Amino acid sequence: MGAVSVSASAPSLPSDRLFALFNLLLALTWLSLTRSVPLAPWLVAAHLVAAALPWLLAGRPLSLAVASLRDYYPLLWISAFWSELDFHNALVNTSRHDALISRLDLAVFGVHLHQAWVARMPWIWFSEFMQLSYFAYYPLLAIVPLLIVRTGDRDAIGELWLRVVLCYLVCYACYLYFPVNGPDGDLSANFPLLAEGPVYRVNSWLRASGDSLGTSLPSSHVAGAVALAWAAWRFLSRRRAIIATVVSVLILFATVYTQQHFAIDSLAGLVLAVGLNVGVTKAAVRH
Image (tube, rainbow, N blue to C red; front, top):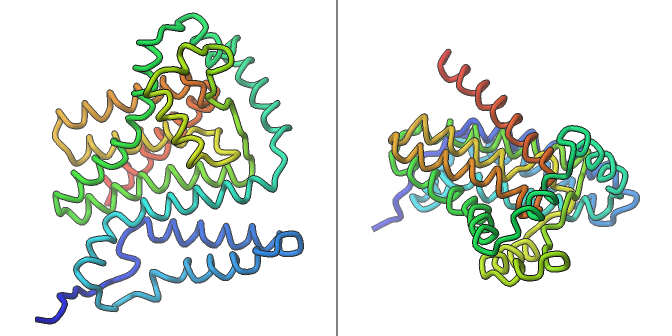
């Protein structure tokens, strides 16, 4: 029996166009660095091909496995861009931006909440709860798309990824042109007891393995979590939407307590996600 294939139309998801635009943005960014970065011309070429890929695949038959993968491929693009930001931002001096955002955080909140909060509540049980809340971002990012894809509703899947991808790529554009490192999340020096927690250790390992430079403002953890919760209210049951919302709220606070972000970073992620998702909802209702 031959391999089952399905016809492909491209771009089949609204997020395809967003990825194409961001690939073009990265191509232009690397084009400006061709004299100083030997790898830059190859990156320019790769991003130009990637930007055209949805249209190059238009109308071509895809195997069932590949067609199914397309329901999740936005996560692959998001991860790939995240890693590339680390490579790009390693070439950039962020100290001026860090100092500016530190002053802004102090001006808005009166104190650096990421420092003051943990100093007021240096309890191992609470620290581990906040670390677990921060870690909950990863299951949320996996489970909400899985549940929506399982509905088989192509419009719902398209809107899910439009919401999520829009939030991430706007955050990534900020990181590209205004990189901020923010706090480092290392509590071992000032709060060694908290650094002994097992969930803290897991998060530290994840940060050391996959963190990217200059990706603090706005918080993509917060923006992504809000977009996922918003999609849950649109397409999942009320119980599941409430759970997703509670998790996203916990992530918002955990980014500050765990010293992964300035409070202003997390607030910016929240404001950005709400603004973008309101816009998407209005467009969807009109449609």
